[in-house]
Image: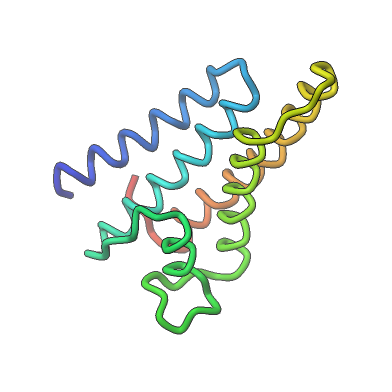
Length: 132
């Protein structure tokens, strides 16, 4: 494994660890998404594929409905990644006036994001043979 990919995997692991230690549920969710993103790029690199840095282009590069995709993903894994991204965007961009309700909403959002992350990471390792 080349040095750049080792660094990419280290970054993915660090974001995952940071998410566990973070107390703010919005940042926990965001860190999980970026961990998944780095794991995804590491998988691509292991296959000598370069994925786009643009979230929108990357989405098409792994979309199972796209005949020109760069990675062959099952629909459920693609959906997990997309949902994780959606949870991350919600945590970063949405706001509520009631702080107590907002904190509970972020906590629930993180729970859903964690489920997506765990499933996506398992898929990368078990079905796509990501070398961690």
